[in-house]
Image 1 (tube, rainbow, N blue to C red):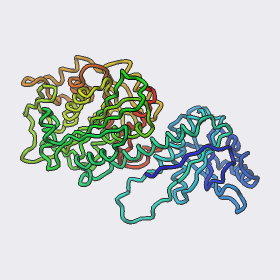
Image 2 (image 1 turned 180 degrees about the vertical axis):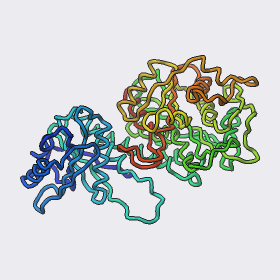
Image 3 (image 1 turned 135 degrees about the vertical axis):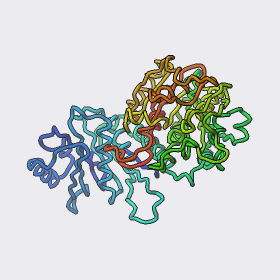
Image 4 (image 1 turned 60 degrees about the vertical axis):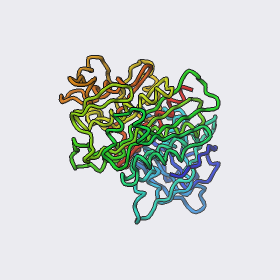
Length: 498
């Protein structure tokens, strides 16, 4: 998605193609503060609609009014935000998404009136409107050769009587929104186009003054003793890659902290010999959404020049079937020396993460966070809205929970306990990669990863549900496919760690 310009101006300070006014179900008359910014003709028409009960304010509903030729505003969209008592940032994002979809055939400049009477601060409104506009206007159909393309919103103007530093913050949100949509493009890319090698090439293109990118090929992976990653990727003619991004800001706020981001990037997952069912297997191109998120988030942090050191490690592979596939019963040796009995080749994500976590610690990460579309059971538990969060440190857990809540990339804490370790005990090796008991599979996967996370704070986000959607979520994420989950969370976390 191209960059979207963002500016803040006093109400009426610019003539937009479209003006959006928030309207709640509690508003008995005209939108709060909104009618005063319109000419008499618009105000009278709005009053007639309100008196007739046509302005109801349900979340995601819109009403469009077109202007006379002499009006300074071409059209007004009344955007329903739901009940005031229930209004939060997600509701405002949903309203903004509904507006941008409603004016998709118009594009141009979209102005939003920030409303001081709403229970969200002006900064929260601005952030949610920019995010909802950018994420709501995303289209996954970039491989289509026919069809009338929608006209993009080129500029978002936030009408506020007192800018109060809003413009710079809103522009930063727009930068993050662009990188969220970049992560979505990666997750939606077909597997014949996006292999481990081409994902590495895309990451290499991001290198700049403060962002270094290295790629380890299959030979180097073998030299480092990464037997888990190598085994998962060896059945494919497209060999595995370990993608490493290092962001070194010129003036890091905390020299004692290096954030280690680790992402699972299975660019296509057939399940290996433990073959997946054919139904919806095409969605397994999205099994690299965690890797896409940490790559895009690192690039966003670098563009914003946030003062936090980052080392990002992405384990990329295709999990296919061939005469060289790894097998149930194999025993692999990971880079940290631990041996792993394979009981299910479709539990491959934790294998590639095991070597990537070790490498991130080796490269100096003091605080680790890994993101992965790891277990279907997590999606069964939390659906497509929350990801599951596991951590070995309560303070680190809370930091991530706070960032998740503020960013809109929601996550929910799950337990870790040493007694869960018995689920992955192996008779033949140090541990096994899955359990034949249909119990606690997200937890035992996290316990498996803990064996490779090294010393220091570590957290694991299982984003199987919200990372790649099978259908519209009914809010501002209306498109099937990748969501860019994790990008906003990581940037928010870095803002808080700075």
